[in-house]
Image (cartoon, rainbow, N blue to C red; front, top):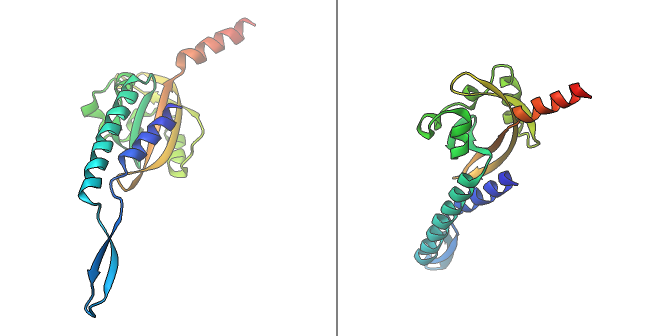
Length: 173
């Protein structure tokens, strides 16, 4: 659900141009209609709408319990506070970092394969915190268009405690 809401707000952020028609005369004296940029009043409305959407996205992202990252070909573009907290890095340290730095060596191949394939179903992988601690995470990702590029939004949940509790429960049965 969070991943879908993030996708919705990112799509809103990417809506920056709406074509309009402009009447011009060609060399033969005939009038032609061409698609041109956004009329200024529409552009101001769209800009205001984008700013409001950014605020909503940021609030939603910061309120989320899941760690959320936006990356392009594995290079991190944006993260929420939960992502920084989960991995132990500041936002400044994470932006521009490869997602593979945050993955345990035993999960890197799976993560690379899923990024390249555009895999969108939840899957498990081991993350790597700044202090070197590994944890089991559940990742949900989706490709989307953002600022004219295809990027990937990924939500991460730390499920290591859930998995260890499940393991203990199974051992007692």
